Every structure is written in structure tokens, then in C-alpha cells.
Length: 363
Ligand SMILES: *Cc1c(COP(=O)(O)O)cnc(C)c1O
Image (cartoon, rainbow, N blue to C red):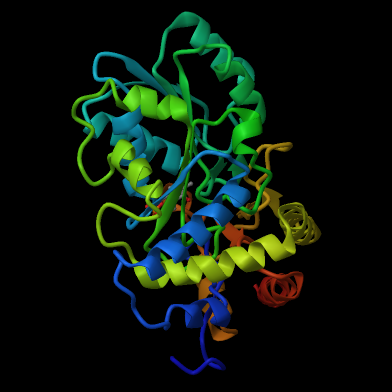
């Protein structure tokens, strides 16, 4: 399946479809990572990452998937004798809470049923009742298609000086409005293979100075994901250990295209894609799994109210050249997700929806 005409286009909520130009960017010759060539590349990429995160603070580049930076955020942001408040409303936020626990952190949760959003009021109340080193939240719950009101939640967290605000924006970065500095986010972390539309293998995080102050108070931060070390190396336009250089070539190219499109335009495109997906669902008598008002601009979880065979749907779509999701874990069959993140165009989404319409008509 190396032939471009036969390749299966990914409509999955990660990894997402990666454009040919981006794949090609990875084929440049290797350079040593302790050379001026690499430092120039890193400086260029990190500068563009700051523009993309809307931050003046350093952005670390980690050769790991996003899960690695979850671990880093938990280890560097939460002291062992204090607590973290995890906001849980889906599979990924649940898993990040487990990552904190696995690192020996004391975790409390504010939890709402899958499909619902966490509100700022819930967070404000929890913070009135207890002291927390950090509030950890997933901006966009990829499992349920819910986007949490991060900006309002940030306001609630910012009332508490001791509390860091750590946000997973893996499936929202560059797909939904996100203003790291303006909103007062201390850690904003993302993976390469979701809304960023790169191949898997890298993750990125904007790190505020408050996080570094906290990390200095934690003796055992681990080694590979030590934020103090990673940030110190950003100052040298480099990484502590050998990075995935080919993927950084791809990021360099992708960030040029992202900034040329413009963040506002990119966010607006995703809102139009969301409208298309919602209109399709309504037109065919399907509900939406996510609570109204909090529906994700990057992934729509369609409630399978017609009891369709989603495996048959996926097989049908594969025949038309698209890989499509059949619902996350426990939601399999009950929902299917139409991912519309990354570089997805309206034309491509229309092709996907046309295919789905044909399947539904014959079902
Ligand atoms: C996929 C996903 C993750 C996990 O990221 P990996 O890069 O697979 O480690 C974390 N958070 C969210 C919201 C995700 O969608």
C-alpha cells in the first residue's frame, strides 16, 4: 500500500492523516544533534511552537508520545506530600489520573459522566474545599467528543496561587482556540499525531516558570521527563538526549503551513467541519453523544441511535478508502466517531459523509 492512489486515508481520532509534503520532509539527511545545523533547526521549530501555543515561555520537545509528558507533568508539577485534582470526564482524563497515581501522587477527582463537560463552578467548589498542587484536565476528551471550558476553568484555578493548571491539549492543539499565556495555563501538552497532524513519536509542552519553581521543590522528578533538564536544554536549542530528528523536520514544515493558514483560520475551519458533521448526523436521524454547548470542533461522537452495525460501517468505508473509528472502548457500537482534526479539508470530510450516507441508506 505504498502507492498513493491506493492508500487508506485516516479519519481516525489519532493517528490522523498526514499530508505527503509532511511525510516527505522526514526524508532529509540526518544531522548530528550536537551540531549548529541541528540547533538552527531546533531554534526555528521552538520559536514557531511558541507562536502556535501563544506563549512566551519555552516549549519542550519530547521524543515520546503524549503519555510521556503526562508522566512528566505529574512528576514535575505535584509534590509527593500534596494532592492533585484531576478532572475526569472520559477515557483520557481517567488515564492521566492513573498516571499520577502510578507515580505515587495523591489524586482526587472531580468526575462527571462520559459525554458531559466539567464546569468552572465544579472546579471552584473543589478548590474551596481543599488545597491542591495542580489541577489536571483534558481540554478535548477524544473518547467522547467533549470539549471542556478551559478558559473559565483557568479563571477558577488562577484564584489559587499554589495551584498549577496543567492541560492536555492532545486533540485540540491547533484545532480549537487555546491561548496558553492569556488564559494562565502552566503546562499545555500535546502529541504529534492528533490535531497537529504529524506522524506519531513526538510530544510538545509549553512550560510556565511556575512549573519550574515547583519542580525545584521535588527531588525525584525522574530522568527522561525532567522538565528542569528539558527546559534548560531548550535554552541551548537542543534536547538532553537524541531526539527523533526526522519528526522534527516534519514539525518544521508543518508549523510553516499552520502559521501560514493562521491560527484563527485554522480554528474557524474546524468549527465549519464540526457544523458539517453535526448537520450530517441530524439529517440522518442520529443524536450526538456530547452534551450540547460542549461539542468538540475536532471530533464528533455520533450516538448510534439507529443501532447500526458499526463494524459493517467501518468495513464499508474501508472499501471506499477511509479508515473510520467504531467508538472508543466501552462506547464501541454505542457511538462512532468522525474525526475532523488536523489538516482535514471540507472536501475530504464531504467525501467521508457521502460514503456514510450511502451506507446508512442501504442499512
Ligand atoms: C491520544 C490521546 C492521549 C494519549 O496520547 P499518546 O500520544 O497516544 O500517548 C492523551 N490525551 C488525549 C486527549 C488523547 O486523545
